[in-house]
Length: 214
Ligand SMILES: O=C(CO)COP(=O)(O)O
Picture 1 (cartoon, rainbow, N blue to C red):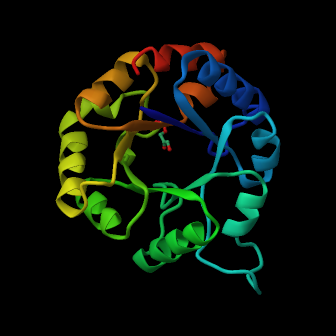
Picture 2 (spheres, rainbow, N blue to C red):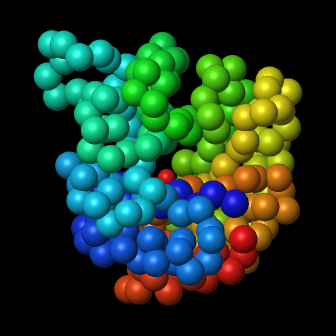
C-alpha cells in the first residue's frame, strides 16, 4: 500500500511531518510520501522522505508567470505529482497537458477523480495511478473506505475496464490503520490523505497507526 500524505495549505510544519514520515517509512518498510506546498518541496525532500508535488501545470519552460513547472518541481526534489486534486480541478485538456509535462520531467503521476466515471476517464489519459476522492467526504474524518465502499470498488472496476495496469488509490477521511485495511480489501493499492496526519497533534503516531493496516 502506498500512503500519500497531502499537506494541502494546512498550517503544519512540513519538515516535522516529513521527518515523521521518513522515520515511520524506515521503521516499517511502508511506502510513505509527503506532498507539501511547492515552496516547501526542497525542504521536505531534504529530509529524505519521498516527496511529491500537489500540482503541476501543463506548460514547458517559457513565458508562464505564476505557473508550477514540472521541471522545477523535479529539480526541487519531487519524484511525483498529484494532478486534478478535487481542490485544484482542471479541464480535461489541462489534465492531459499536466500529465505530459510530468512525464517529460520524469515525475510519477496520480490523477485524482471525484467518482468512478471520472476514474475511467482519468485512466484513459495514461497516468501511473488514479485516486478516487468523493469531495463530500474530504476533510470530514469519515473514511471513504468504510462509509462508501461501493465508490472504491466501482472506481477499481472503472480503472480496470480501461487499463488493468493502472492502480487505484482512494482518499477522503482516511486516518487509521482500520481505514487503510478496509481500502486494501476493496482493491485499493494506496491511500491519499491529509487532515488525519497534517492536523494530528502527533503526526508520527498518526502515521504509525495508519501503516499498522498495511
Ligand atoms: O483530499 C484529501 C487528500 O488529498 C483527503 O483529505 P482528508 O484526508 O483530510 O479527508
